[in-house]
Image 1 (cartoon, rainbow, N blue to C red):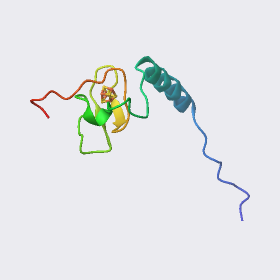
Image 2 (cartoon, rainbow, N blue to C red):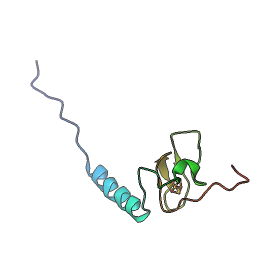
Image 3 (spheres, helix red, strand yellow):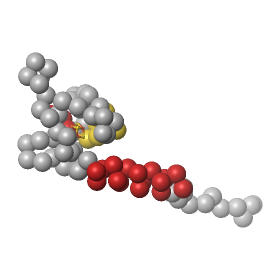
Length: 83
Ligand code: SF4
């Protein structure tokens, strides 16, 4: 029997860098993991697929996956001709 033990997983340098970058991005865009009143990603024109709980936000300041119940300062209603 070997004494080798599988090391516990731990964040790498890239994870620490991405955590800082994404945290700053969230702060700069006032991105929140909850709605703001009636405003939520699901009802925002930049939320790509409102049928999904998680979808791509195509706002140029974000371009990340977001949750249907999240919100940010760039929220805009879906134009009536697209609803
Ligand atoms: S712009 Fe903001 S509110 Fe709209 S989908 Fe993207 S993260 Fe959500």
